[in-house]
Image (cartoon, rainbow, N blue to C red; front, top):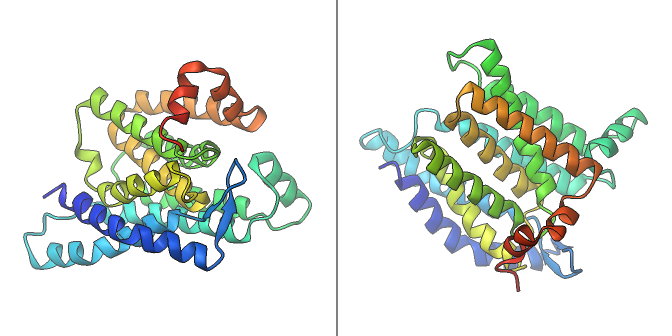
Length: 273
């Protein structure tokens, strides 16, 4: 039963994907990708739509059936994931030219509305809300919040090439599964992970772009997966790594680093047209 949310959401995403891509293009919701090709944007809306459609039969089965279809913390997970997706959509549709922590910080200092700043504050607020009442110490609570918020932001920085964010998510997930031998954290995430994989295929094939809507959602999933899989020590290490990679991405260029590294360059380009 734990795999049912993943399966239902996968079917929903596969059915909705072609229509969503065509609808975005027909409505003029496109953006040029790194090669200047106009593609459907933001494709993260597909993930949100598929997950919400999947919740209809899943919630009914939960209420009318055995009550073991959805994870106990499914509602709180959905609150964070859908919340950061909404904040990302706000940035996609209303965001200005400011980019990165420095750009959004300068905009706020000059009295200009920064949707990136709203997104950052909102992700912290959501993380504080959904990670409370877990019976953990204050230290671990704040550590978990840091992991989730930093992961959410980092995947925004990764989403600069087709398929990169989803590939990073799949590699992270594979590492967590192999390293912990625990698939339990996937139960509440599966209803979102399945459509992320479908959207990732379209993203990789340059038929759409996740946008901040999708990359924030993927980052939120990654952060929650890390929190539910790692010990306090593991989370502390994760925070350190996330800070290092984020600072590098803000100061230098992750894309340039990938291009200079043969193994990463091959992995990053695999599957693109």
